[in-house]
Length: 141
Image 1 (cartoon, rainbow, N blue to C red):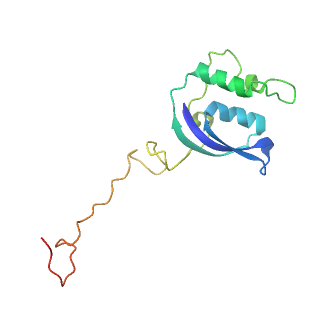
Image 2: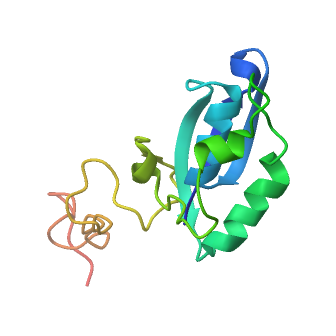
Image 3: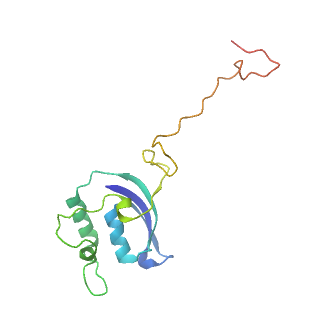
């Protein structure tokens, strides 16, 4: 599953925020359902792991399973209705989140990068070779 860092405006309050790390796409959906659709901001992809869906579902239930909506219904059940065998979203793109990559995420394709590979460093010439020696000084060999 893709992991991210994000800021959560608790209850949608801009003055009451928490930065969360290693958040999964499924957790972002729950945070939005609990705090408001625009409460999760600054989402940055930070990596990924091979987390099992059942393990993630259990973790989310342990952390958010008691959250209720205004009709006293389980927010978890509203966001993820149905059988426990259903797959959770695994990528930020699965839940419609535009991705901003952190500088430490070197393996990911960044916006504007069409190759997926890091740019090659510019070649440099050694000091005082004939190609870069001052015009009026002899080149050292």
